[in-house]
Amino acid sequence: MFRTEERRSHFRTAIGLSELIYFSTVRQVRRTHRNAFVGLASNVMQTVIFVAAFYLMFSILGMRGNAIRGDFILYLLSGIFLFLTHTKAVTAVMASEGPTSAMMKHAPMNTAIAIASAALASLYLQVLSAALILFAVHVIWHPIEFYKPIPTVGMFLLAWFTGVAVGMVLLAMKPWFPGFAQTLAMVYSRANMIASGKMFVANMMPGYILAFFDWNPLFHAIDQARGFAFINYNPHFSSVSYPLLVGVILIMIGLMGEFYTRKHASISWSAGR
Image (cartoon, rainbow, N blue to C red; front, side, top):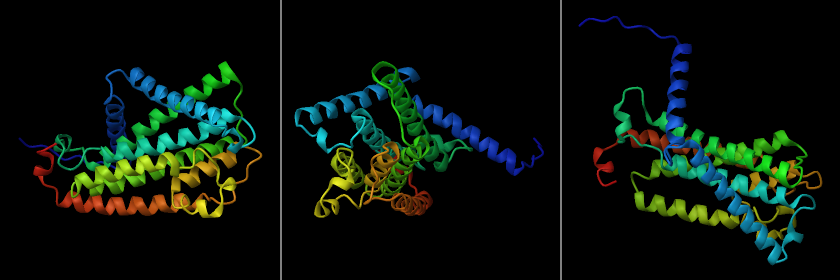
Protein backbone atom coordinates (compact mmCIF):
# COMPACT_ATOMS: atom_id res chain seq x y z
CA MET A 1 0.00 0.00 0.00
CA PHE A 2 2.76 2.39 0.98
CA ARG A 3 6.10 2.62 -0.77
CA THR A 4 9.07 4.89 -0.56
CA GLU A 5 10.23 6.66 -3.67
CA GLU A 6 13.83 6.03 -4.56
CA ARG A 7 15.70 9.05 -5.81
CA ARG A 8 17.80 8.13 -8.84
CA SER A 9 20.98 9.94 -9.72
CA HIS A 10 21.60 11.36 -13.18
CA PHE A 11 24.11 8.59 -13.81
CA ARG A 12 21.60 5.83 -12.98
CA THR A 13 18.97 7.57 -15.12
CA ALA A 14 21.40 7.67 -18.04
CA ILE A 15 22.25 3.99 -17.59
CA GLY A 16 18.56 3.07 -17.49
CA LEU A 17 17.87 5.11 -20.62
CA SER A 18 20.80 3.52 -22.45
CA GLU A 19 19.56 0.06 -21.48
CA LEU A 20 16.07 0.87 -22.74
CA ILE A 21 17.46 2.17 -26.05
CA TYR A 22 19.57 -0.98 -26.37
CA PHE A 23 16.63 -3.37 -25.96
CA SER A 24 14.46 -1.24 -28.22
CA THR A 25 17.22 -1.29 -30.86
CA VAL A 26 17.44 -5.08 -30.65
CA ARG A 27 13.68 -5.22 -31.14
CA GLN A 28 13.98 -2.98 -34.20
CA VAL A 29 16.76 -5.14 -35.69
CA ARG A 30 14.61 -8.27 -35.29
CA ARG A 31 11.52 -6.52 -36.62
CA THR A 32 12.04 -7.54 -40.26
CA HIS A 33 12.91 -11.14 -39.37
CA ARG A 34 12.98 -13.11 -36.12
CA ASN A 35 16.41 -14.47 -37.00
CA ALA A 36 18.93 -11.61 -36.87
CA PHE A 37 21.34 -13.46 -39.19
CA VAL A 38 18.68 -13.79 -41.89
CA GLY A 39 17.91 -10.08 -41.60
CA LEU A 40 21.59 -9.24 -41.93
CA ALA A 41 21.98 -11.62 -44.90
CA SER A 42 19.10 -9.98 -46.75
CA ASN A 43 20.65 -6.56 -46.14
CA VAL A 44 24.02 -7.79 -47.44
CA MET A 45 22.39 -9.33 -50.51
CA GLN A 46 20.67 -6.05 -51.33
CA THR A 47 24.02 -4.26 -51.27
CA VAL A 48 25.67 -6.99 -53.38
CA ILE A 49 22.88 -6.73 -55.97
CA PHE A 50 23.36 -2.96 -56.13
CA VAL A 51 27.11 -3.36 -56.66
CA ALA A 52 26.65 -6.05 -59.33
CA ALA A 53 24.02 -3.98 -61.17
CA PHE A 54 26.16 -0.84 -61.25
CA TYR A 55 29.28 -2.82 -62.17
CA LEU A 56 27.47 -4.29 -65.20
CA MET A 57 25.99 -0.92 -66.13
CA PHE A 58 29.36 0.84 -66.01
CA SER A 59 31.00 -1.97 -67.98
CA ILE A 60 28.32 -2.31 -70.68
CA LEU A 61 27.81 1.42 -71.21
CA GLY A 62 31.54 2.14 -71.14
CA MET A 63 31.24 4.54 -68.19
CA ARG A 64 34.27 3.28 -66.29
CA GLY A 65 36.24 6.21 -67.64
CA ASN A 66 34.05 8.51 -65.52
CA ALA A 67 35.25 6.80 -62.34
CA ILE A 68 38.19 7.91 -60.24
CA ARG A 69 41.52 6.42 -61.29
CA GLY A 70 42.13 3.59 -58.83
CA ASP A 71 40.14 0.69 -57.44
CA PHE A 72 36.87 0.59 -59.38
CA ILE A 73 35.12 -1.66 -56.83
CA LEU A 74 36.02 0.75 -54.03
CA TYR A 75 34.60 3.56 -56.16
CA LEU A 76 31.28 1.71 -56.45
CA LEU A 77 31.20 0.65 -52.80
CA SER A 78 31.94 4.16 -51.52
CA GLY A 79 28.85 5.48 -53.28
CA ILE A 80 26.49 2.58 -52.67
CA PHE A 81 27.31 2.18 -48.96
CA LEU A 82 26.57 5.84 -48.22
CA PHE A 83 23.48 5.89 -50.43
CA LEU A 84 21.93 2.83 -48.76
CA THR A 85 22.87 4.03 -45.27
CA HIS A 86 21.24 7.41 -45.89
CA THR A 87 18.10 5.97 -47.51
CA LYS A 88 17.57 3.29 -44.87
CA ALA A 89 18.02 5.83 -42.07
CA VAL A 90 15.31 8.01 -43.63
CA THR A 91 12.96 5.02 -43.93
CA ALA A 92 13.69 3.67 -40.44
CA VAL A 93 13.20 6.97 -38.62
CA MET A 94 10.07 7.82 -40.58
CA ALA A 95 8.60 4.39 -39.75
CA SER A 96 9.43 4.61 -36.04
CA GLU A 97 6.59 4.39 -33.53
CA GLY A 98 4.70 7.60 -32.85
CA PRO A 99 2.92 8.94 -29.74
CA THR A 100 -0.24 6.88 -30.39
CA SER A 101 1.60 3.57 -30.72
CA ALA A 102 0.73 0.77 -28.29
CA MET A 103 4.35 0.71 -27.10
CA MET A 104 3.93 4.24 -25.71
CA LYS A 105 1.51 2.88 -23.11
CA HIS A 106 4.49 1.44 -21.24
CA ALA A 107 5.75 4.07 -18.81
CA PRO A 108 9.50 4.14 -19.61
CA MET A 109 8.91 4.22 -23.36
CA ASN A 110 8.66 7.47 -25.30
CA THR A 111 9.01 8.69 -28.87
CA ALA A 112 12.62 9.83 -28.38
CA ILE A 113 13.64 6.27 -27.49
CA ALA A 114 11.68 4.89 -30.46
CA ILE A 115 13.40 7.31 -32.87
CA ALA A 116 16.87 6.67 -31.42
CA SER A 117 16.45 2.88 -31.54
CA ALA A 118 15.17 2.97 -35.14
CA ALA A 119 18.13 5.11 -36.22
CA LEU A 120 20.68 2.95 -34.37
CA ALA A 121 19.17 -0.28 -35.72
CA SER A 122 19.55 0.93 -39.31
CA LEU A 123 23.14 2.04 -38.61
CA TYR A 124 23.96 -1.30 -36.97
CA LEU A 125 22.76 -3.29 -39.98
CA GLN A 126 24.56 -1.05 -42.47
CA VAL A 127 27.85 -1.11 -40.55
CA LEU A 128 27.78 -4.91 -40.33
CA SER A 129 26.84 -5.23 -44.00
CA ALA A 130 29.62 -2.88 -45.10
CA ALA A 131 32.18 -4.65 -42.91
CA LEU A 132 31.23 -8.10 -44.23
CA ILE A 133 31.30 -7.01 -47.88
CA LEU A 134 34.64 -5.20 -47.53
CA PHE A 135 36.11 -8.22 -45.75
CA ALA A 136 34.84 -10.57 -48.46
CA VAL A 137 36.23 -8.40 -51.27
CA HIS A 138 39.54 -7.97 -49.45
CA VAL A 139 39.98 -11.72 -48.87
CA ILE A 140 38.39 -13.27 -51.97
CA TRP A 141 38.96 -10.71 -54.72
CA HIS A 142 41.74 -8.19 -54.06
CA PRO A 143 43.00 -6.08 -51.13
CA ILE A 144 41.01 -2.95 -50.32
CA GLU A 145 43.00 0.11 -49.29
CA PHE A 146 41.66 3.46 -48.04
CA TYR A 147 43.81 6.57 -48.25
CA LYS A 148 42.31 7.99 -45.03
CA PRO A 149 40.08 5.32 -43.44
CA ILE A 150 38.93 7.26 -40.36
CA PRO A 151 37.62 10.34 -42.25
CA THR A 152 36.00 7.96 -44.75
CA VAL A 153 34.10 6.31 -41.89
CA GLY A 154 33.22 9.81 -40.70
CA MET A 155 31.52 10.52 -44.05
CA PHE A 156 29.67 7.22 -43.72
CA LEU A 157 28.32 8.39 -40.36
CA LEU A 158 27.55 11.81 -41.81
CA ALA A 159 25.41 10.20 -44.52
CA TRP A 160 23.56 8.31 -41.77
CA PHE A 161 23.14 11.48 -39.71
CA THR A 162 21.62 13.45 -42.59
CA GLY A 163 19.32 10.49 -43.30
CA VAL A 164 18.13 10.58 -39.68
CA ALA A 165 17.56 14.34 -40.00
CA VAL A 166 15.45 13.99 -43.14
CA GLY A 167 13.52 11.12 -41.53
CA MET A 168 12.80 13.30 -38.47
CA VAL A 169 11.16 15.97 -40.61
CA LEU A 170 9.07 13.38 -42.47
CA LEU A 171 8.12 11.71 -39.16
CA ALA A 172 6.84 15.01 -37.76
CA MET A 173 4.91 15.63 -40.96
CA LYS A 174 3.39 12.14 -41.28
CA PRO A 175 0.52 12.38 -38.70
CA TRP A 176 -0.76 15.60 -40.29
CA PHE A 177 -0.23 14.74 -43.96
CA PRO A 178 0.28 10.94 -44.14
CA GLY A 179 -0.23 10.54 -47.88
CA PHE A 180 1.93 13.53 -48.77
CA ALA A 181 4.71 12.45 -46.39
CA GLN A 182 4.83 8.93 -47.87
CA THR A 183 4.88 10.34 -51.41
CA LEU A 184 7.58 12.85 -50.50
CA ALA A 185 9.73 10.10 -48.95
CA MET A 186 9.34 7.94 -52.07
CA VAL A 187 10.19 10.84 -54.42
CA TYR A 188 13.22 11.74 -52.29
CA SER A 189 14.58 8.17 -52.29
CA ARG A 190 14.01 7.82 -56.05
CA ALA A 191 15.63 11.19 -56.76
CA ASN A 192 18.68 10.17 -54.74
CA MET A 193 19.28 7.28 -57.14
CA ILE A 194 20.77 9.95 -59.40
CA ALA A 195 21.05 13.10 -57.26
CA SER A 196 23.28 11.38 -54.69
CA GLY A 197 26.14 11.40 -57.20
CA LYS A 198 27.15 7.82 -56.51
CA MET A 199 27.67 7.23 -60.27
CA PHE A 200 30.00 10.19 -60.87
CA VAL A 201 32.19 12.71 -59.07
CA ALA A 202 31.70 16.47 -58.74
CA ASN A 203 35.08 17.41 -60.23
CA MET A 204 34.12 15.88 -63.58
CA MET A 205 30.70 17.56 -63.84
CA PRO A 206 30.05 20.77 -65.82
CA GLY A 207 28.97 23.74 -63.71
CA TYR A 208 25.45 23.94 -65.13
CA ILE A 209 24.83 20.26 -64.23
CA LEU A 210 26.51 20.55 -60.82
CA ALA A 211 23.86 23.10 -59.79
CA PHE A 212 21.21 20.37 -59.91
CA PHE A 213 23.11 18.22 -57.39
CA ASP A 214 24.70 20.77 -55.09
CA TRP A 215 21.60 21.05 -52.87
CA ASN A 216 21.80 17.43 -51.76
CA PRO A 217 23.75 16.80 -48.51
CA LEU A 218 24.25 13.16 -49.52
CA PHE A 219 25.99 14.31 -52.72
CA HIS A 220 28.52 16.24 -50.61
CA ALA A 221 29.04 13.32 -48.21
CA ILE A 222 29.70 10.83 -51.02
CA ASP A 223 32.04 13.18 -52.88
CA GLN A 224 34.01 13.95 -49.72
CA ALA A 225 34.14 10.24 -48.82
CA ARG A 226 35.79 9.53 -52.19
CA GLY A 227 38.26 12.32 -51.52
CA PHE A 228 39.28 10.56 -48.31
CA ALA A 229 39.19 7.07 -49.81
CA PHE A 230 41.32 7.82 -52.91
CA ILE A 231 44.76 9.39 -52.79
CA ASN A 232 44.43 10.88 -56.29
CA TYR A 233 41.07 12.62 -55.89
CA ASN A 234 40.68 16.02 -54.23
CA PRO A 235 37.04 17.25 -54.19
CA HIS A 236 36.75 20.95 -55.05
CA PHE A 237 32.97 21.39 -55.35
CA SER A 238 31.72 19.75 -52.16
CA SER A 239 32.25 20.28 -48.44
CA VAL A 240 31.87 18.52 -45.10
CA SER A 241 30.29 21.52 -43.37
CA TYR A 242 27.27 21.76 -45.69
CA PRO A 243 25.72 18.32 -44.95
CA LEU A 244 26.58 18.73 -41.26
CA LEU A 245 24.78 22.09 -41.04
CA VAL A 246 21.82 20.85 -43.06
CA GLY A 247 21.58 17.78 -40.81
CA VAL A 248 21.61 19.87 -37.61
CA ILE A 249 18.98 22.29 -38.98
CA LEU A 250 16.68 19.45 -40.10
CA ILE A 251 17.12 17.68 -36.75
CA MET A 252 16.02 20.87 -34.95
CA ILE A 253 13.03 21.30 -37.26
CA GLY A 254 12.11 17.63 -36.84
CA LEU A 255 12.37 17.79 -33.04
CA MET A 256 10.16 20.87 -32.87
CA GLY A 257 7.63 19.30 -35.21
CA GLU A 258 7.65 16.02 -33.28
CA PHE A 259 7.20 17.88 -29.97
CA TYR A 260 4.21 19.79 -31.35
CA THR A 261 2.75 16.61 -32.84
CA ARG A 262 3.15 14.72 -29.56
CA LYS A 263 1.31 17.45 -27.66
CA HIS A 264 -1.62 17.23 -30.09
CA ALA A 265 -1.60 13.45 -30.57
CA SER A 266 -4.94 11.76 -31.10
CA ILE A 267 -5.61 8.03 -30.77
CA SER A 268 -7.66 8.24 -33.98
CA TRP A 269 -4.45 8.75 -35.98
CA SER A 270 -3.51 5.11 -35.51
CA ALA A 271 -7.06 3.76 -35.92
CA GLY A 272 -6.79 3.38 -39.69
CA ARG A 273 -3.26 2.01 -39.74
